[in-house]
Image 1 (cartoon, one colour):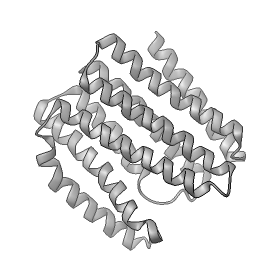
Image 2 (cartoon, one colour):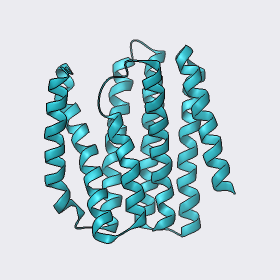
Image 3 (cartoon, rainbow, N blue to C red):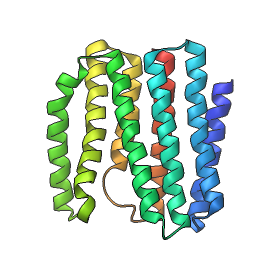
Amino acid sequence: MLEILLISAGAVLETLFIMRSYKRRDASSVVLKTMASVVFVLLGLLELRRMGPSLYGWYVVAGLTLGMLGDLLLALRFLSEKLHRLFFAAGSVSFFLGHIVYILAILALCPAAWLYAIPIAVVALGAACFYAYAKEVRAGKITLLGVLYIGGVLFMTACAATGAFIESNRALFLFFVGDNMLVVLSFGKNDSPYRNAVLHVLYYMAQIFIALTIKFV
């Protein structure tokens, strides 16, 4: 029951954030976004308490926490022009570290996954770079960081996919589903409020799915 209440509360808060940010990015939108992110961390802690401590569970909770911190930092960048770049950089680093921790979580369940994931991720990254070039995406000085970030996300997804196949693990399968939502966030530009809203919904669903994987370990 508490699980359903948390997911419902998070969905309401995320919806309110999307509605508020559509009009303006202010302190209220920061609070709503952070509260919604706190919910998926609490969900992860709830599942960890129910299932008992595990290395996988703690890694997932750590990844969720870094995601929450990234959400807060990226939201704060709209409140200060002077600190915009600093908050953006700090938020991006927090998300990247979150992906690293998620990879460690996957490898805790399937240590061999990285061997198969490397060639898959390399091919996927090559396709992503070709896509970006074809779409004339230009990131300037942060191009290298962007490639590293997207490479990390793709490697995480490849690890989850191969791990789910090797171990026939429900947790890793659900993780893979969530990963694919995060991959969508890594491409293209937020060129319209509607697309931006869809990306926020996918991101939140991904974090919820990842938190729920703890119950299947």
